[in-house]
Image 1 (cartoon, helix red, strand yellow):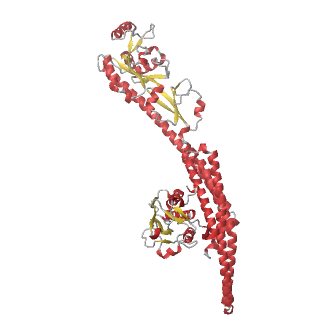
Image 2 (image 1 turned 180 degrees about the vertical axis):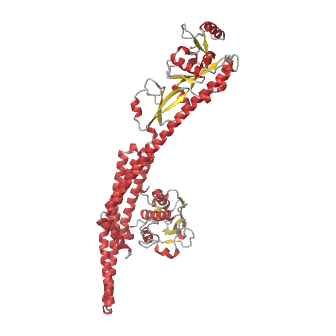
Image 3 (image 1 turned 135 degrees about the horizontal axis):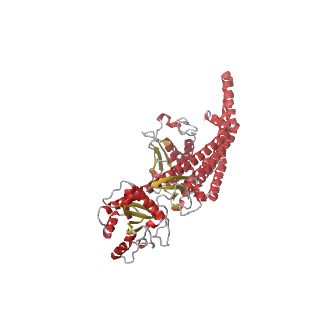
Length: 631
């Protein structure tokens, strides 16, 4: 003790007499700032990756759906040319077999339209009327050089009945796509239109896709051949919002996207907007993530714009840099104040220890010079022993002062947490709130233990609150306090319920925190396991055990572990001060019981201690209530 303590105090005093304490504060603040910046940068990077993935996914599913629609139209073309004449019932059966409602959701209608020469118009109308549609007519009315007419359309619901007989060739936008499909021999997509199926309720932008049907037996090698051979079209009509809902099925809720019916965006060619807002394009593009991509489908170019929503990054992720900054700041202040306080209080003790060392050295030199002074040296040694006893009392007072002065930083931490809960609670999610609650509970618990240590060091064993105490509850609170250190460790508690003993609850909690904390520290790194158990001995004495599966203790050094400042491992391997077990031994000793190491254990370390029985006076009203701060 005389060799270790002065060096320890010298190291503490060095922090006070040099800029080391301030340097540690500056370094820890820099680390906290760096950690907060890294957290924010990671969140931004994650948001960008998430946005790119969502945008690529939307583009892919839209492209795949439109490609599938081309295949569906070509299937209809094959069905039409495979027979000399397709009846209405056969078309209905064919469409039902396609099952578009399951495999190609979002289509408003799937139909067949034919070209009609002016001289054929009356005959076609009469024929379809005789099929059971007495009001059928090619519309809109009026004389034209060439007509077209929708003759088959499924499902034949109220909306689609409005399009039955419609001349799509009469509309310039539709005619452009029909001509492109006819001349190219491939499915073609129309520009943006308002479908004739719209009835004034929930009107949406629309478009159509056409696949040409040519007359059997006629050549279709050249554009002129295809114009001469054209018979009609298998086509699909789409309402943009219904189609996108069928394609996406609400799969992308954290990005918005727009589809423009052109290579360049404008309000006039905005076909679809996922947020339902058809204006304020600049605000849309000013969001944190924004990108554009072209999609060519049905021989037509669409421009897709993607913009992030605020939900792309959760509130929990957004608050991480602030939590790191605030929590790190609190810890930095606590560390600085603790080091500064310890170094100041240790200065006087260091001076006293240095003075005693010098006196002992002088006494030894005098003894070597002459045996005649032996009597005087003995008397001086007796006086020195008395001073050592006084120094030991001073050390006890020093520990008491430390326990007293550390309560002020802890109270500041409570105040900081209270401020965070009052002023920033709206920015902290449930997990953050739980973390703050646990930090505050741990701070209050530490303050109570410091109070108990203060009473203990100032008045010795006479300050012990010897009460009937619930041991199981103390073990639970100790494990709860050590949760950050437990991590993935397997902590096994094997205690009878209930389990009572006579002791000072707060000081025993200090013992449990030290023993369980040491067991976690020295457990097997790959498979940590700590077991807390007990055995009821004769006369109700409680024998507690805390065991781990770690490196163990050499029996030759087992007697040293309870000495003040004793360490069996260097600082790089396992952090610590060498004080904890010495304090535990003193607390257990003042209870009138014992603490020892089981030297027969082959794996790991097992520390046992006994507690006085509470059997003779155990009644429900005798059990000491637990502090609210320790819950």
